[in-house]
Image (cartoon, rainbow, N blue to C red; front, side, top):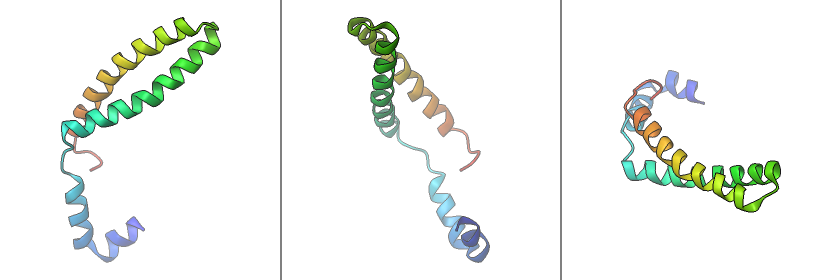
Length: 87
C-alpha cells in the first residue's frame, strides 16, 4: 500500500510524508510517557510480586521504576523527535 502510493502518486505521498515530519509537542510526549509507564509499572509490580512474594516490596520497586523510567522515556522521545531519520 505504501509502495503503491509512493510509485503511483508521488506528489500526494510527499505531502503525507511532509506532514509526518512535524515535531510532537512536549505535552504529547508527557502523555505517552505516563500511559506507557502505567503499563510498564503494572508489569514490574506483577513480576516483582512473583519474584519476592511481598506486596510492599513489589510496590516499592514499581514506584521507583515508574518515576525514573517516565523521565527517561520523556527525554528519549524528545531526543528522537530531533532526528529526521525514518520520518
